[in-house]
Length: 236
Image (cartoon, rainbow, N blue to C red; front, side, top):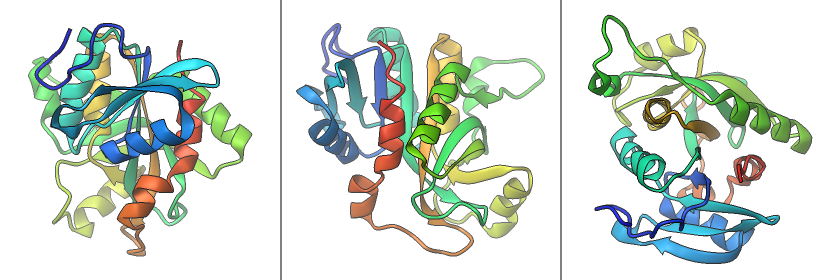
């Protein structure tokens, strides 16, 4: 079995796939956390690996940037590779003062400025993108056990990286969104359509309030708290 975007064979993927946006972060996780690692995809350099973590089989694969990219890979994983659970482990920009660099956000739901849900032809409404509760609870329990600083709440998945003024993201923050990123809503909708499980665990990489930001190297190698939490949510 293969797709235009994935050369993996049948059963190459585990039931749980961790999906960082950056394929180099997938490589970092495979090399530093997993045992008996096998490379299962290199198409478009969207690296994917399968190995074991504490005896449990798990896969990790990059998703790329934006909802169209993660939507393609998640759809194929759910529908063609029999994956049950995808956990996005990505970066986000904080829009609230009590989320600092390297803090964790566990995304209970996602709002968006995208027309992603138009493809489902739902009458007279807008689809809410929500996490799988069981996976979310496992993540919260793990974050508590590790003693990491985290918040659970809503995120805003934007189609824009540049040019969103405070008048835009500030209003979303007033409505309770904790941070801005670019993929979670697309992942959640894709999971909901497939009747599969999804969760996004995000690390604050920058603050729209203080303008502090992490380096590209830190975003690859230093967002380890969310990796610990995600690896505690492996579904066998």
